[in-house]
Image (cartoon, rainbow, N blue to C red; front, top):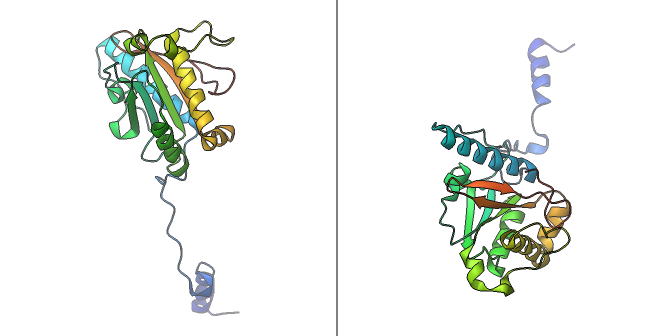
Length: 217
């Protein structure tokens, strides 16, 4: 039977790396490759916005909810109409660094925006994009009928702004096979919302079929 000192050395050797290597440092909790499920990221934005809106109506300071664990530097990419003139971090009640905000008339997702979204989704594991429209939208009205997608079987109850947003979601998926693959794997999703009224109420759209996931209202 080994002595007490020898027994201690034998026990400690089980925790030492073999082959003279060094132990790897622990994986930090904020690493981007951990990722956050898109439904979790969406629920955080939806609940933060609901809390901020309720606080404004009640005349109190809004509470800040706990940020989802595993989220990287960016929680979501938000596409918004440049004509809306909204402070989106304030509207959603999240720190500005949690969002990558891209604005354009409509908004319209151009090739450059879709390419940037693809990089964020694949390299930084950003799992959620949000397309926010506002009603009525002067940008869409001034662009003429060509910018207003026709109503389809699942969209006929929506106005031109929502139909435009859904068309942008389709355009992003059609332009990016990587985004489609991430969406099919459950690692990426796009939510559509319509901002209304002076205090910025958001109606979140629920869809039962691609290209966007069935998020709750």
